[in-house]
Length: 430
Image (cartoon, rainbow, N blue to C red; front, side, top):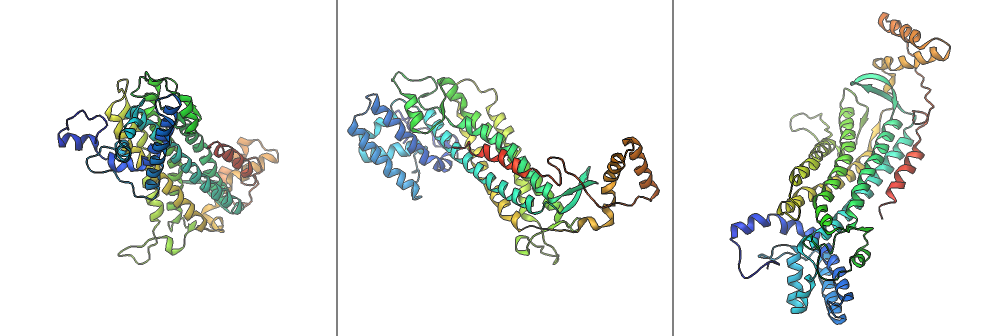
C-alpha cells in the first residue's frame, strides 16, 4: 500500500530504487510514528475533524500497535512502502474507514519530519547520557591519578612534565565542549514541525501549539516552509555534534594505542581486554582502541556527506532527503557504542607510576629549572640561556620536582569546576 496511490503501481525497478533501505531503517521510527499520530488525532478531535468516539477507537488501536512495536513484533509488510503506510494500513485493516481519517491535515512530509525529530531527540539524549558516564569516569580517574607524573610532548618530542591527572581531566573537559555542540543539535531537534503538511500548511484549522505540548517539544517550527527546510539541518547539526565527540574520543584512543606500545609502556590492560597475533605469540594488541579510532575518524566525514547531499536543493521537499537516514541512523548508534566501550575499558587501565625515573626524561625538567632561576631573581632570557648551555655541554642535572599550583595545572586540576560546567549542560537535556 502506498499513501499516494491513485490506482496504478509503479514499475518494480522504480519502486525498489526509490524505496531503498526505508523499510529496514523505518523500523527505528515506528514508535515515534505512533506517538506522532496519537498527538495528531487528539488535535483533529479538538478541531472537530474526528468525533470523541472515533478518537477513542483510534487511540486504542494505536496503543495496540505501540505494544506490538515494544515487543519487537512490528514489521513492514512486503509491498508496503514505509512505516507510515504500515501503521495506516494496520489501522484501516482493524477499523475500516475510521483508520483512513488519521491522515487528515498532514502529509508524509511532516509525518516523517516529526518522526525524525522525536527519534533524533531521543538518540541525542542517549548520547548525552553516554557522554556523561564517560565524563564521570574520566574525572574519577583524574582525581585518582592526580599525583602520577608522566611526560608531556610537543611535536612528539619530550617537552614538560605532565600527569595522568591532567591527561584524564583534559579529555573530560574536552567532552564538556562537545556537549555544547550536542546540546545545540538537541535544541534544533526539539522543535515541532507537525502541521506544516507538505511544506505549505493546510486549510484545516490545525492547532499546532496543541501537538507541540502533547509531543513534549520545547518549541515550534512556526513558519511551515522553515519546518520543511529543517529536514537535513537537524541531521547535519547532529552529525557535527557526533563528529565533535568522535574527535575527542579518537584522539584519546590514539594516545592509548601509542602508550600501550612497548616503546612507551605507560599503560596496560588485562590480557582478556587485548587481542593476539596468529604468528607472534607475545602480542597483546589494542584492537578495541584501534577500532574506536577508526570509527571516530569515519564520523568526521558525516557532516560533509550530509552537507553535500543537501547543498543547493530547491525549496520544498525533495526525495534526496530520504538518503539522510542511511547516513545518520547508523552514526547515532555507533557513537554510543564507542562511548560505552570507552567507559568499559578505561576503569581497567593500569598506569605506570615510575615513568619519569628513566633518564630519557631528564630534559622534561629544564623549564622547571629556568623558572626556579627566574624566581630567584635572574632575568628569564638569561636563565633560558644558562640552562640551554648546560644541556648543550652535558652538565645539566634535573631536579625532579614539579610545583605547578595555578588553576588547571598539575597540582590544581579544577576538576570540581569542570564537573560543574559539564553537568550544567547535561541537565538541559530534558
